[in-house]
Image 1 (tube, one colour):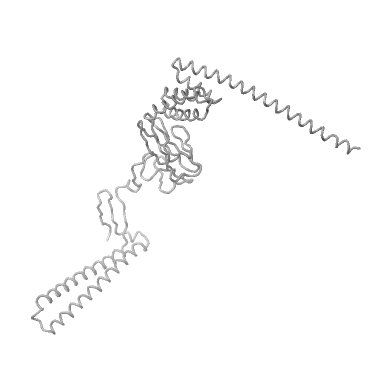
Image 2 (cartoon, rainbow, N blue to C red):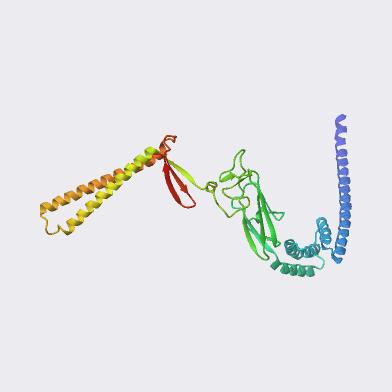
Length: 356
């Protein structure tokens, strides 16, 4: 008995659910229709106020009312009105973009009121504004993850990076931010009908207590590029160049070995000059007057001098090389810092001094 009752109850429940669904959907449609009618009423009032403000020459107010009406429902005719008001208040870039958009929308919408007239006026406005606007190309070769770019307060779509972006001529501010990176900001003056290119490079934020690579902390505690003041993109002077001179300390053993090596090289050069003189004498004076024994003796003497010169040259080079190794290997101590080389990068001069 209970089973038969439950079976009969199932269709009843389904019918009740279906009826509730119909009633609910109908209520939603009614509410949407009422809300749409209310929005359209507000839109009509905004359009009327925008037209009256335009007739009175209050173009800023007319633009504000028209934009609010467009947020409710946009049409090519209303977009044309907005573009013309933007031209009046010198928002040339926005007016140029809306003129392009209203022409496209009117061509695609066959039900547009005064369609041909709207298309004609939109195209005319676009042609009139084109020689008055400018463009900026924002490049970001190494854009970090999460980077956002703003051009004069308007966020730039990532797809627009690397492509000309229409702007109103005058002072333009380019800003970029990314998580874990120092914000970027650049103000430039863009002439009318010109295109400028801005390359963005975001430096990583300094770790706690230090600065990122290639940056150093200035007097105010900020991490800036080497030798650059904040906002300076043209100079490239390292912090070490702020000092008049720099020092390189020579170590006494290295000096001694280098001095011996230099003396050996000088001796090698002197012996080679003697050998060269005797060779020239052999070629000129002994070509016909010397006996075979004298000639052989002179040749043996020249060979011996050449051997000495070569051996001393190799020894001198080895000693100089040893001195270089000692200079870098030996530890620095108070007793070994007898000699110092002072280098002035400005005058390009070097002075050797110290205690000997």
